[in-house]
Length: 290
Image (cartoon, rainbow, N blue to C red; front, top):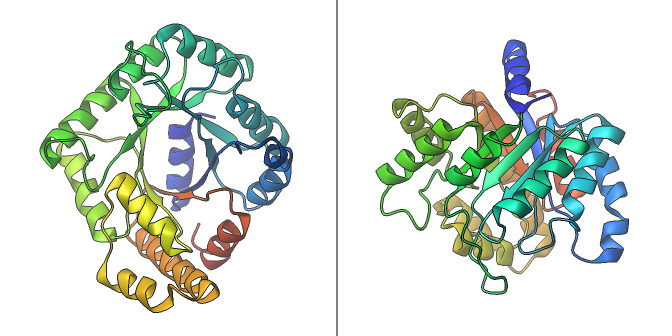
């Protein structure tokens, strides 16, 4: 089933879409345990699971498609496969798309990807909108896109960022997933602006459960998300108590998601970091809301 159809079905039920993001482990030993991770995550009944795609790897030797195939065939849950384009050319992207078609996977998340000094950049694609147009020409895929509630770090201003997002949707993106944020009001304001701009596709609110201070600092530096004062107080008070910070961080995340659902967001996309304990704690906290 294509992602937009999932949103239509959940809307009829009066409930938001709930989804997870996972990543293929880099170490071979951890990759052997991915089945156990999938067992636990899929037992929580997400509506779909997105699988990230590593930069710079061979398009013929990437674990993303293998994991996505397992999610679809073994667990009967729709996978959403990330495809980044800065380190791949058109031929390599075409090869990935052929693999997805052969696996019966019809949902892809088209992303530009981050500049990585460890991998040479290719020059066929500069923006995610260009990748979206290319994928659209190659098959009957449902194409998702990324968006930034607090504006992309490389965008000159919020207006330009929204205009570029509209280009992505006009190119064929029929669903959006937001970068993580900690201020819900930021997301509500952003969502309203997308509607004013004529963007009418479902928008998932991307939520990152935070359980340690280093993780917060790393994510804030990477994507530019701002921290509410109440969350900063949590970090300051419990930074030297890992167990307490875990509990406080989970409570914050669950409250954040409850508020999002109460505001009738289209969906909530949880960046699980392959942490099944975190995913289960969240799902237990919102069991009767989704």
